[in-house]
Length: 296
Image (cartoon, rainbow, N blue to C red; front, side, top):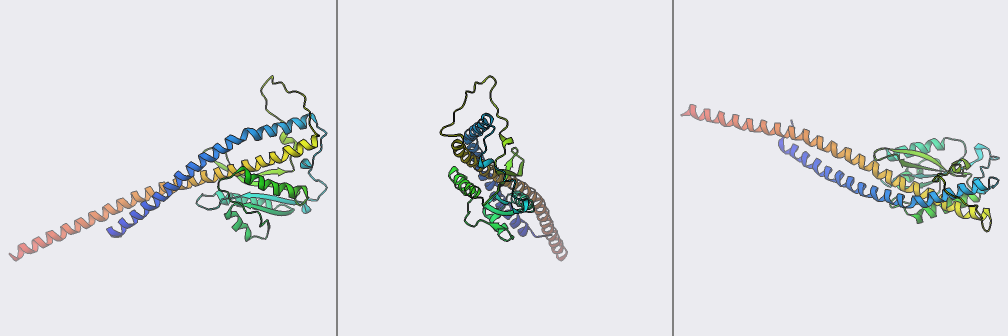
């Protein structure tokens, strides 16, 4: 059995670690709340954009736009596939980063010429060791996602898609199902699917007037679609940021609970060691007293 001083030192060490994990839990909780508020504040605008695209397609079913072009004439092996992979900048978030990496590796296993656009340091370091094309100029952090950063990312993606440097674009990120569950998923960003705009929720008996598109439907779509892509990317960045901190909260809570259990076990061990030491001292005192009595 370890001595009292060693056990006491270990208890103090675990308590110090528990203070750190508890502080990280509180920080992640605050950042999660802020991220969810930012997403809730911007969602109505981008849902409105989605509704307008749906409305235009409903009124002009014959409209053919480059953002909806699936380029079916290109064989699967020759298709240029881009993936925006959103990981964390640091660990201590459970299986958060592992799930994203695993999902992207499934995407890379499919036929085609793949190119990665990695957001987050951990993902960048991981895929740098793999034999895959990574855009080295695409270096963004996941901390504090902003609309400006989403516009920068979408500008790069749209430019390469329009120049036929990419035929398909996906976003690999983590979406929050609820307060305790997150799910890594692959979202197809480009080309757009008409089926995604097939249904638009509107209040009953709401009047929708005839639309007039100036200067032309193509110009209107050229203006609306990039803003819609901005919103999709921004939503993914904020969802991933919120999911990261949610995962870190759960990991830190688990670590704090484990530390409390360990302190409880160590305290029992400490009390037993202390009781054994006291018993030993009493035994020695009694033995000494008996020896003195025999002498006298």
